[in-house]
Length: 216
Ligand code: AMP
Image 1 (cartoon, helix red, strand yellow):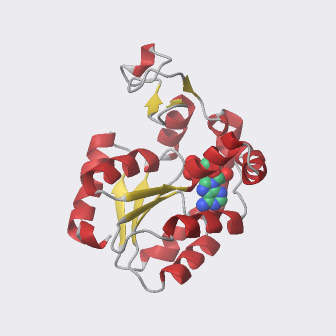
Image 2 (image 1 turned 135 degrees about the horizontal axis):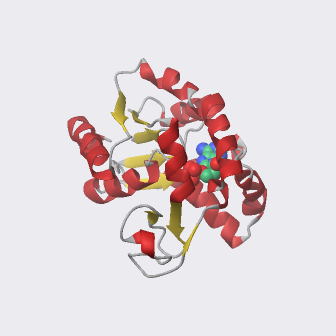
Image 3 (image 1 turned 180 degrees about the vertical axis):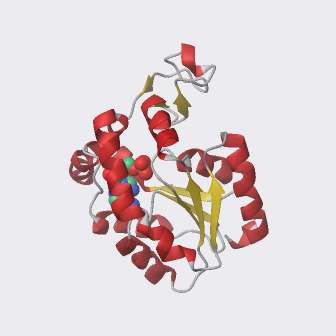
């Protein structure tokens, strides 16, 4: 199992999708699952949506249950990427308990705060296929349509400036301590996430190659 760590806007989702395709991994993104619940209007979605729109974390027990369900029933030996989980020490301890000694490789994508702000304010995603775009990156800059499927691009509610600052506060207070939680393990890795997507992917792929992707 691979955990992608890093602040909002580090590129965890983008890199996870590329890793999934390159290494046939199962991608579990708690933020994506929660957004689907919001869209479906489920009870979970109603509870989660308000917190997400405010940049707060959804209660640990709810997210832990989602992750437990996703992990259950996966074929033996299936490699997994966790994106957006764990988000705090409680969740990391929960994961350690359910994995019961199974190896977890943590890849921390380090990005400067200025870069994060630039990325989040310009981020747009496709409501249909989920592809992430940035207003400054051609060809998307001239389009309000997804360059993969042609559907409308939208801004995540929590990418608005006032919510981004709260998400960063939450990151530093609750998620950043996970670096300390994992960094003493020899399965902890760091990459420089300030570079372009393909360069970051190269670095991450090298790590996954050395782990041996049949064991992730
Ligand atoms: P993300 O797409 O990972 O940026 O997540 C979007 C939002 O979903 C977060 O700001 C939280 O409100 C919620 N969320 C996602 N993952 C978690 C998690 N592991 N624990 C609590 N809340 C989460």
